[in-house]
Image 1 (cartoon, helix red, strand yellow):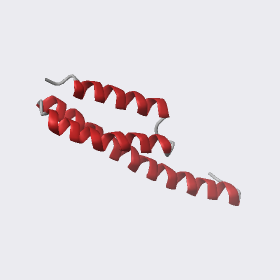
Image 2 (spheres, rainbow, N blue to C red):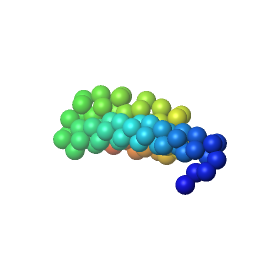
Image 3 (cartoon, one colour):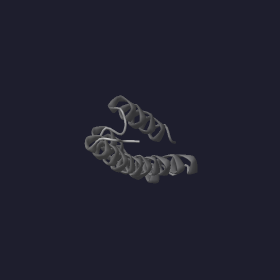
Image 4 (tube, rainbow, N blue to C red):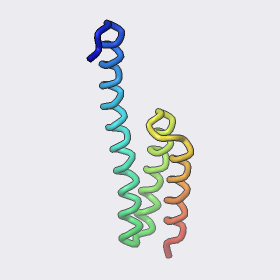
Length: 87
C-alpha cells in the first residue's frame, strides 16, 4: 500500500494510464480482427479497406507506447502480405 503522498499520486496515475492503455490495445486488436475476418471470408476489397483502418491504429498504439514500434511494424507488414496474397 502506498504511504507517501507522491506514492499515492503515482498509484492513481498508473491506474489511469492502465485503463487508457487497455482501451487503446483493445481498439487496435479490434481493427486487426476485422482485417483477419475479411481475409478469412475471402473478400479482398473488404480486407484492403479494413487494413487501411488497421494500419494507422497500429502505428498510433506504437507511438503512444502501448506496443513496441517494431511489433507494430511487423504486424502491419504481415497483414499487408496476407491481403496482397489473396486471389
